[in-house]
Length: 319
Length: 292
Image 1 (cartoon, each protein chain N blue to C red):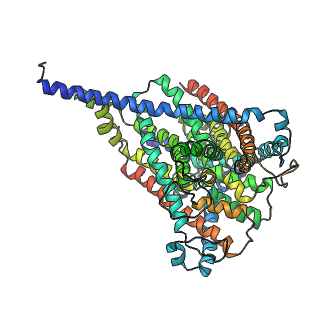
Image 2: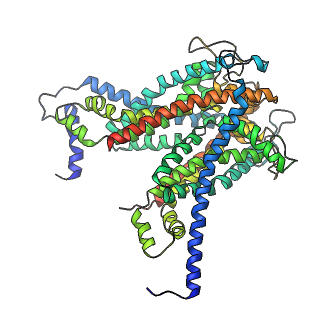
């Protein structure tokens, strides 16, 4: 019997009570079994319903919003003042705020995260791994509001000693804590990707006289590149969706400024601002919530899908 | 082996020096992560430790820092986690069982799988907006514990499902075959053999997911968990506050005293999380040893 037949056997056996006519003893339908299967299927559908609800909600409310505000004003306008007169609905300052925080976080977290992953998978002994891995998990498990506290009470005051003219709320401090926040994610996921590269590839390179640096940068990292890239993208998508730390650290000032020393507002921080205030349901200000959320959702969804495509399409499979 | 020219030797030495520098760089970066965690914990504890006493744990929030406490937030968090566990564990584990044991490899299973992977990447604040529109407004559950728990459950369901599926996958096929060969039905096999064997793995995933729910702030802010609650919730329909909300509230005030209160709150929150994470790591290490 081949392996394939072996794995298929139980399936046909179990379905026989319903469809098979060879089994005399089990010719009745097992109602209990069918009901349980129905319940389990129902639970699985919850996730589909969740997605459908998110998409329908965001799209329908955004359509309401775009009946009042033209898409060109929303996407290309450079002033975002929806909560007071004269109101203006250009989302670019929020996108810009998110962008500089994310880029800053990525500049911090990608090199350090990758270096940590390389250390963990290529250099660290098992004993060291057993210390560092839980520490990374702990760092990853610290709630974002704690990073917000860290930004306000530690990072910004420290920055102030170097840059006296930095504002209390500033993009730099937000970028630093978001970078710290996504670092463990990059390190852990990239470490998994590098660990999956077979030892024989490393041994081959060492046998040709390569140093550990050359093995790592020219063999291991290229071989695990799809996983490494996917970890970068997932971390970036997490940084874009990050909310509490940037709300606390970067402030509430929609701003197209190039300076990281000034207060800005990200898309997520705006959503928090509206929900904390007493914005009446149904007005344009309330609808902006959904328009911004739709934009945020779309951006992170695209990045997540691209990262999955990279993983599936470019994964090198080694035997 | 012949020794190369002086130039080649120098080149070789340079390459090895580069490798050494690179290795030390990677090690330094990684260990600085550990140091960073230590600095963060140290910073929080020197700020908050002085405020941490029984009065802090047993008092309601107050405008006066010296009288403010975390009682309603702590109780709210415990309520919330209980409800989230009640909702998300049955649904999450059932989904994982369905996908692994019942769904087969059809298109439906594939659609659900891709869908869950994508849901796991949706920013938490989007779940908050969903909760606000669906639970708080549409089902008129108001700003209650139930609204918060349902929102949080949706948020952590993908995590529970993915972890549970991994745990169920680790159960060897031979256990299933043994049960089938004795005439057990698919559900009997799943319930009496697959679930118990994968239980530690599922528990690890569930605990990690729940600890994520404890720390999440944004969805609760969205559904409007209150920042000033001077009473304890008595049932699932009551309004509530939670630890991260209270911390957020204190951090966002300008006064130094409230920042220190926030630090004390963070210590409590981290202790709760640490206990949960330690349990998860303990369970995982125990089962890893058993499987070997």
